[in-house]
Length: 470
Image (tube, rainbow, N blue to C red; front, side):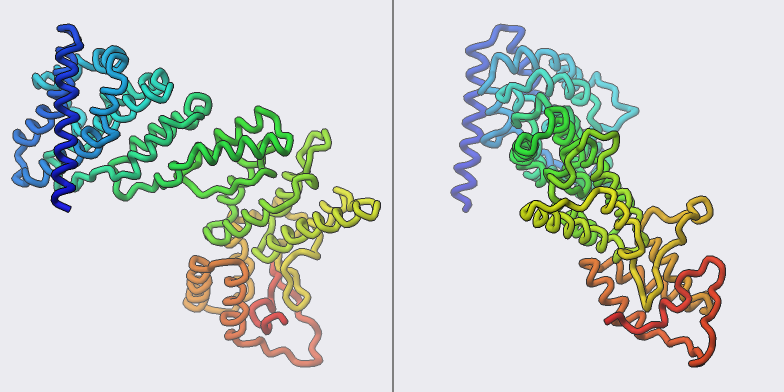
């Protein structure tokens, strides 16, 4: 292992020396001065900053800079190699424009009193810009990063104990390379914005960015493009969904399927999922069911509205998870029924019939004949929560009207706890039916007594006091 490390280090030193020799042999006086300023920036200015700071932990800070240079400058595919591969273009289009800044840093002229700067934070920006010269994207990358390069905020070494000098790991480097070298970088604007997002989050060890999801961005976008052409989506629709996928990639969970390519379906479905479902496992479960719906059942008929979204508006207006699941299962059954009817030359189920069925009580959650839902026709009187789980909680609590606040709080907390850890809709209901509902005492009602009159607004007076559904 030690031998390998020595060989690796020798290779890095060789690359550095070869680049310096080539520069002296190939550049004129002005270009050489620019190159020297650049090399001084990397190998002198940053280390001088360490020596001048008041922090006693110089050893830790030096290792941080060493590791940064090792990863982004001297590695086999690092800055020195990239500079050598496109030497004259890089000197002319990148280093000469930035040379005054490097010289100002070297001479201590740059005033950063208002912004604490870690000079090494520029290494990853330089890496991205130099990488672009071999990917036919340099005009876009350099234009977008030139100002970002100078204004990149980092961590001042004086505050190293506070920030722990987080070094970007290899995932950041791979994400930058995937974006800059990608074949869609020039044509999909979201790719360019994503590069800035990656750079801005590259030093945060607790970043919410999933860098790994960006590694295969070309494959993801190629599949979307292929799907769109296969199902007959327009070029604009394909472009829109590709751009939207990249904008969400690595930053938030989302659902993609060919059926979502048309119109604004992708944005609509993912926005509704995030509004209506907070449990990640249940969100993914619902997303998968939507993804399996038949494309032909939801093709546009030239009307003003999108039948798919008309259906989904009703689906996402569900008051419980069971209702939501029932509606999606019904739509999947319709796909199968219409397929079979077409085989025997029968008339398919009409869109009006489907919409009517989705809005009926048939698909709502029921317990012992009682519908678990908010009253119909009272949209101005009852404001339902956005989150379906919160709707369920609000409805469930009507069954606890006789309990004191302590008991109510305990029930509420228990339900929320199990919802947070539920792995599916079914597992959540298994808990509710098998534990919570079953353990609660039943209300004693005389056998011959008339049916109790429900309180105004109460929908579930007996809801929590029934046995588990068979």
